[in-house]
Structure formats: C-alpha cells, structure tokens
Amino acid sequence: MTTPPDGSYTAVVDRIEESLAVLQVEGTEELYELVVEETVLPADGCRQDAVLQVTLRDGALVEATYLDAETQARSDAAQNRFDRLSTRLSEDDESA
Image 1 (cartoon, rainbow, N blue to C red):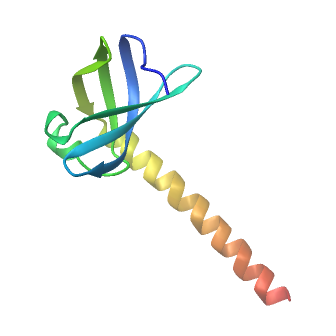
Image 2 (spheres, rainbow, N blue to C red):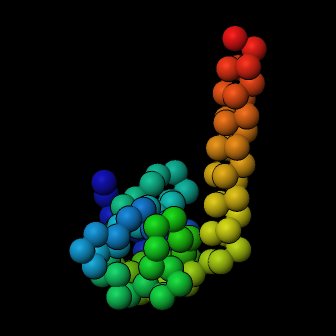
C-alpha cells in the first residue's frame, strides 16, 4: 500500500496490536493503511472500528478527532446487515 497524500481523511481503526494502531484511511479512490502509536489517538478513538477524522502531512498523522456519530452509524449499519442475514437464514431453515 502507498502512503496517502497530505490532507484530511476519514479513517477507521482496524486493529490495535502491541500499542500500535492500524488505521484504514479512506482516500477518494483508494484505501490506505497507516500504522501509528496508539498514544497519538484520542482516548475515545483507541478501539477497533472507531471512526476518526485525520489530518496527514508527509505521511504522518498530525491530528485525529474521534467521530462519535459516524462510529455509531457504522456500527448500527453493520448490526442491521447482520440482523437481516440472520433473519433470512432462519427463514430458509424453516422452509426446508
């Protein structure tokens, strides 16, 4: 993966391993991965699937803001997809 150009992006915390946070940074046409020290993230954004607004300069994170509403919206959307799939699978089992 390449380094994202300087700018402001939406990023999602993919995982945290041994004090390193792996962010999936959403570019306009490409998805980037950025690894940063967990300590540079806002406290409420130090968890998997947290959505952040990040500013990058020279390939480094210079600012990160936790987006509570966006994090909740994405979580709700994922749960709704899961619920729809579960319902469909249980209906298929009943009709078999």
